[in-house]
Image (cartoon, rainbow, N blue to C red; front, side):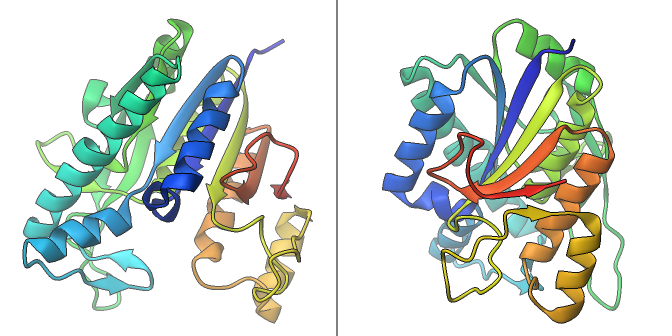
Length: 257
């Protein structure tokens, strides 16, 4: 029987809200046994870029990452956000280690080619995650804290979607553990009515998702999140939960199966 590991992804909005973040870190620290934290930080990157006179450009919620913006996200994601999370987890008794994909060659990616007239710049699409290397750290009692940065093996850092990092990490760990992947954010789960915070859809299957997408119940930024979740389940991840950042105990939110 496999041991369990919990992979928790925390979004940029939660990282920027001190009360939510403090609660999430307490709850994450209280998760028994093996665990991994994956974080975003887009809002902080936008703030830092603005202070440096660098304009943030977005297409369909995805950041255009030119050379100047790549410098900002590398500093913010790999430094400011990542190391603050590591320090706070250490204070909570969690032996955390901050990682980008370049560290230990743990996540290799390729630069996304232009598509539909849009060049996203230095944005990476994941080719592989070294699950064995991560498992080796985890078995030593280390909790990886993963920033949304990868590399191409040719000396280039690439900005990579944090939901994708979480999904691909969970998939890479699935041969070694029974993995639960938790996407935590500012809502209680996937909502059937965006205006009603209590309209949580308890379970979504692939068939459900196709129906909800077709009728418009699920749209926008939730689409890639659920697509990542379904891909993880189909690749052997035991379960995926989308839930409120202050409810990561596995008993709340929307279960993807």
